[in-house]
Amino acid sequence: MKPTEFELQLLRSAGGDVPSTEQRRQNRAAVMQAAGFATAGAGAAATASVAKASVTAAKSAKVVAAGSSIAIAKLSLLAVVGVVGAGGIFAFSRHRVDAPPASPIVIPAPPTVVASSSSTAEAPASLEDSNASRSAAEHATSPASTRTPRTAPPRHELSDSLAIETELLDTARQCLTGGDVTCASRKLAEHRSRFPRGTLASEAALLGIEAARASGDNAGALRIAEELLRLNSSGPYARRAKTIIDELQTQSK
Amino acid sequence: MVAVAHPRPMIAADAAHRFEALFDEHHDVVWRTLRRLGIAAAEVDDATQRVFLVAARRLDEIRIDEERQFLYGIAIRVASEIRRRAPAPQVTSVALLDAIPDSAEDAEAQLIAHEARRALDDALAGMPEELRQVLVLVELEGVPVADIAKLLGVPAGTAASRLRRAREAFAESARRVRARMSREAR
Image (tube, rainbow over all chains, first blue to last red; front, side):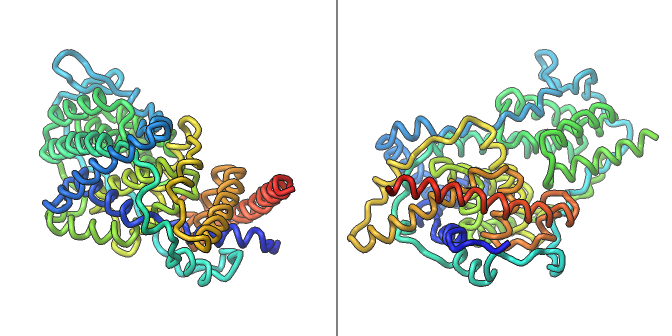
């Protein structure tokens, strides 16, 4: 089926849609800071980004109010876990995980990332010359590229919450790596409590699986892995969940 | 004692340098892909940050020559999550106000580009999400179908079939958009 010129025009138009230099700079500063990579320069840039975002947000208050919320998608993943008691002990449905691990565990290997393939035999031909298309997409510039952002979400809120989420999960991972499941469980419980719909909910679930396995609670780990798979039908998380499920089912035989 | 199968974590400085390079090389591609996957202009910066934050946390899992594919996978997931929320807000009026051109020539060019992209987004919005993902990645980003199959966790034959259906759906959706534009132009 040959595409019409109208279709090709639409597809070509995508190449001109690029973020502005300012958007790129702000995103870079915010992510570097949230990820804990912030240098002095990045920190200053992030601060400037926050100030600018606030000004722009005030100018377009209606739009920001309607569209800039960083409320995360309803990942009910962590519904399978809960906080038990005032001590904040993390539990997986019916099983407490504050017992020491019964045996050494191996933290599952990361999911296999898509391997680049030179085989295009199965790939139908592109709608138009792929080089031309890609070149336009990669290199096209737009007058908008030098303009300021059109709208500005409250990026400082995102950065703050992501920074806290990141810190909690990093600590939980360190605890797990050190064999301290109780410590990891506390941090995961705190993450669950503070960020029930957190950006890193799937990351937290993976750590939860590891914590459950470390405590010998394979049934709990399996439940979380199945929930993770239900919420991520494809992609790296799905592959990771499938691997874990296969391992757990093999172990149970 | 926990035996860790992860690669040895990179030291912080190396990780920061690698992440900076990854961000600088792939930021615009991720941003653009998110837009075409249906993320509104008002949300695309936040969505882009989310993608790269996940990448930062999993940096030691990302193979050097597979960074873009990894980011595509995260972008698809982030876009799906955001699109499952309330419908995206309409920000066209403000976007246009902010994009007031400096000259009449710029104005015409921008208007044409803006209308074309709006029509593209309308056409993409009329497609099922799974088909839209394939069309955007193959036709706009040039990702090989074999890689799409791995990204989406489906057999190669399924990915190829999905691309064929995606092209048909896009053609149909583009026809509807064109018809609507023709009506509006009268």
